[in-house]
Image 1 (cartoon, rainbow, N blue to C red):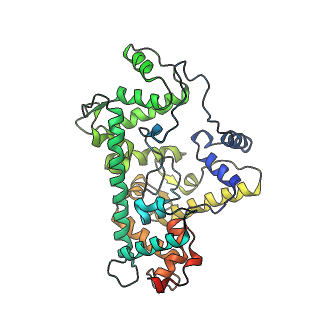
Image 2 (spheres, rainbow, N blue to C red):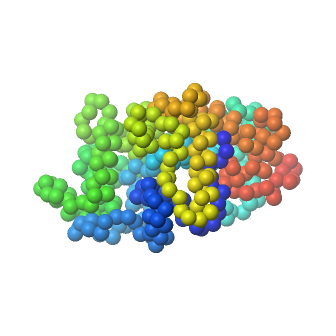
Image 3 (cartoon, helix red, strand yellow):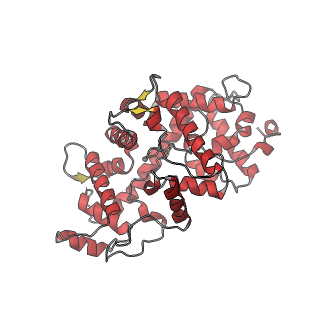
Length: 373
């Protein structure tokens, strides 16, 4: 499978792709997409101005949206909004070390780190990585992402469990969520206590309704309308729970399914985003979008090659701990760099194709690799 990273590097292309990821610009005409791009470039969010009299400036820190379920899930092949995860290959190859590989980092240092990773993947020390060895590594790195999410969840859970009783009600979460969006926490809590209208804008209300549905889906039997720490983890990270993974698949199918048959055809899968803008760069991006999604649909997701993706097929595709998927992924990753066609991966090959595995170009530093290895 080819890397899902778009190869355009200009700021204009980055802006267009960022806009397409905005839920409020997902389905647009050519004219309205231009407006969306201008709004995005100006840092404007498509949100009505009359949020509430209690609206305050949201805090500008990293923890602002900790309690909001993320769209991007590390080690999962598809985003919550149905976009392909363009960083998937790096996530399942680098694990928690992904952030260490930076475009601005010293290439020689990055090369040494990549060599170190290769020696760890090469379990039998024969200086060649097989599909089975890569599969084993992918499963380890995926579990690493699971452990990271579990640790982050502890902090997030404490943030929404103010009384520390080990359980969170929907109202407790709703207060913290609105506070993270800039509402006055005390004022919101008082209004909810008195059953007063919160005067939320339509977008915020829709988000809350969706979150409420997801909240009760995460409430494992026996349903008590409270979430403990493990259930809250499933709420934030549905990949940790079979039931929530199925729910996530249903949500994605619902968003993409145009005829209501709860299945996806190729045309439905490649239909986002709708519309193009009137320049060649945008058309190239649109062509890349269709090409990448078509390849993923036909080569990976549609396992029985019947031209239809069922919920079961999508669930198997989305399951990050599926060993069969990990083996297929290992084979596809090796095929990208397997220049000598021996179905294994040697160190010089992985260094030559370092951008695919790490996002960092190291081609100029691969010449004397055998001397250092």
